[in-house]
Image (cartoon, rainbow, N blue to C red):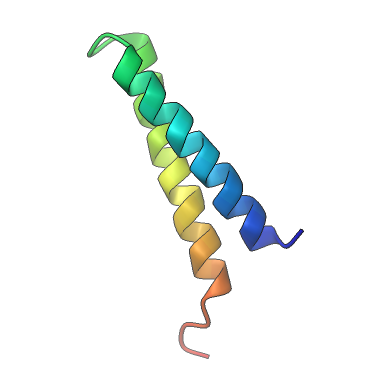
Length: 58
């Protein structure tokens, strides 16, 4: 499997896990903060996976 596909799939899974964690936990709790961190990591992984596939400036 190509690297960009791994980033997109894992990034999407982490993003969904983070969103569920944020939704199901009490606001401003430790679990909520961990969920926000997961959301940020998931978005970054998705963006990096998409960026790797695009031919920008080549």
